[in-house]
Length: 57
Image 1: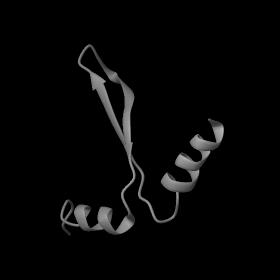
Image 2: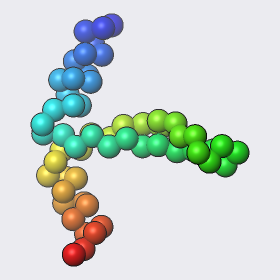
Image 3: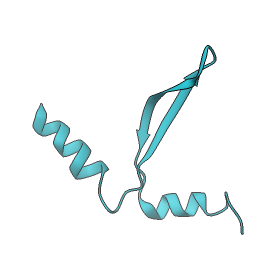
Image 4: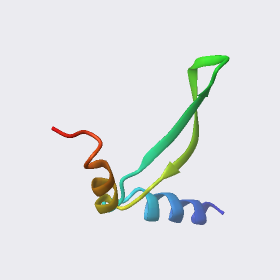
């Protein structure tokens, strides 16, 4: 089990080729408390292409 987690997290997700994004959310009753909902780890090329138009200069 530990080897599978290590392989998934450190070998496939958190690498120099990936852009890791944390997806967080909160509940209306506790607006200052956030919880981790998921992780997305697209390649840097995909992340740069998609985010290129978000903040035009």
